Image (cartoon, helix red, strand yellow):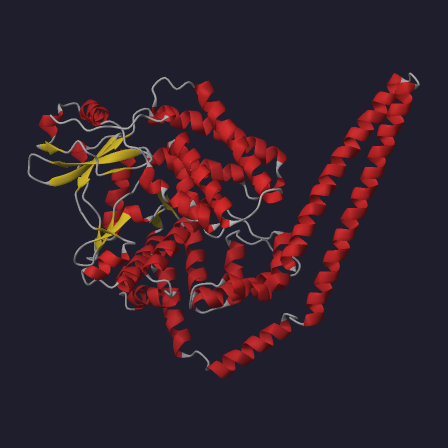
Length: 560
């Protein structure tokens, strides 16, 4: 039989990879990444070419570190709001650059897991994988009953690698939580726990099969959503056999248009499918990147991967429903209220900057893509937000945000000018016309909000009345130039106070060090030690104050 050539394995793919070497590799890569961040922020130029080189290095490093870090990179590739575009582009390619492993290893795992020779399990089996992912690879096959299937095989040694990686990441998280206020503020430990839990579930193919069956049941009444059938007889924790359903990659706009499919229609179908998952079912695919979705020749949407799934509890789901319809109605007060109830916003004394920014996002996001340049008009409010840091991100919510930002990226590839309001109309309409019998099964709050939104649309005031109400709201919120100038003056005063405090610590440090040196020369060793200890303590406070002054200056430049 013809043997396929396999590239040399990376270090994490080798069987004799020791735990100590793994910890050294991760620690060295993390230290180098931290140094690169510091260097780029303080020394190097910030040209696109330099950022592109750094991005390529980061993508290559994550690929060399293996599956756990490839998953982290894939998550970061959806965060264009956090990373420069060069990093997003480089990390996106991780979805297509994961190395395959030898077909002989895949076959050995299949035979060991299913307890039979390959020939008795499948009539045909293609040794060349269709695709290789971070946790496994997929081979096309045919059952003896004639059905075409794909066989997903887990990477050899994945359990051992996960244990090593999660131990190292746990130590890094504990260290960060102990010494970093930011890590404590954003509950990094809970986010790590949620990530580890989902990662272990994704590596269990029996759990994925159960997820696929549940997902298929949720969309049983939706003929334009396709979910491949699972074959339990040929499925274990490390092997998954499912129906072969080919399709066009969901973000391949040219191929879709070539066969007469309107990308905007696929956009609406995908948005409505995700609104149903999040707001109605409370069970959603947490990793909707283009490799996990495709389109059939007749315009149906296929969902493939069900390893990374997450759930929304009923209480949070009701809050999300209220937030969604408040966004559609552009009700800023209700949006802020529901986000506060969900723990995403912390109540502060002056909520005006938060309401202004949220109102801006609500107004623009529902109608057209956000232009970052428009944020210049909100620089004072943005400064206040950065200073007060009122936003929180609970662990569960990180995966909802990840799914939404990934989906938003796919939607904008299909239609750069897509509108959430227009795309969501079919979903809202289906809720309004749903029968009372169906509303009793989890649709209560959703249907009520949908009918309330319909009533709002019918009774919506004309454009003149809306303009007057917006003006009245702005007057009530005190959006006058004198208030902005007051914020600017307060900002300069706070910077001055920090600088004075740093100067006092510098004087104390210098005086203590000088006193210690004099006492040491005079053979007063005890006093010298005490003076040097005082110098060290005050020096640490000096360093902390200087860091705060530097951060304050950067925020001042951002606001200006």
